Length: 363
Image (cartoon, rainbow, N blue to C red; front, side, top):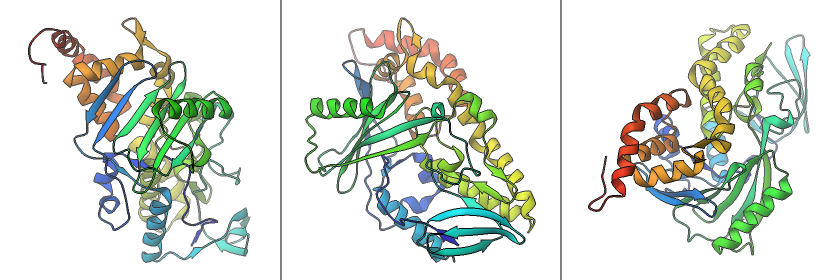
């Protein structure tokens, strides 16, 4: 049984799914729901260098209302009973759990908590302190002229601005950590003014996103006696990019796998699930948390890491390949530093050659 207070709605989110999600879940492409398929992305530093990549494989971007509706329809087709109600409280009972909802009560032998970052069931899921949260906010703009994705990094801020094309509007937003929401809103509005993107008729949104610190990853609570948490409720979000859709889908899949492998013994499910998450992507996200501040505030070769990243992508095909894999979700953070150092000499050679007269070096 699935309890969902709002069913399909336009959640505050960019809505882009990495290529690795499309490969693992073909239904994300093989469906009749409207979606955008951008195959180019520009990214750069505010007031600084910019570059453009043609993606090896297009991304897929959904309006969240459409994605949510599709997921609910798939659940119902698989046999789940959907009830539009808010779960107000969950208490232990002799047979498992007693749920109090906005429409009455229900009992359950096991609970899967999928309440997002604004989890009112405080006894379950990740314990998010202020340092473990970034804010995402922005506008849904009734304009479909933007066909490419764009990422812009304001220096001296842990976060970025995005433009994501959708099938019937454009999502323009910002996610940032350690800055007040008012400052983030001013930043994205200044960007929209510079880019000539009107806010007339646009809908504003804001929502917290888990972004666990390295310390929080060591104590993160994703399962307990008779329950487990998936997606944002478990803090399973990339601490650098704020991408959480893939990890929501994958953690739900791992939860189902733990239940199937548990062979009818719910007391095993939580531990099996926790081990599977750590093995599959948890250790990688913990690594991302450890390098997030260096990514946004570190320096390399006399300049900000982010600025060098943009410049290297424009002049080194080898470094551009790294960026392609990061955007696709196919480059683990655990192997990122070793890969960069393995390729550093050739990357610098390609950058140097790009300044020489004649054709640009290609790979």
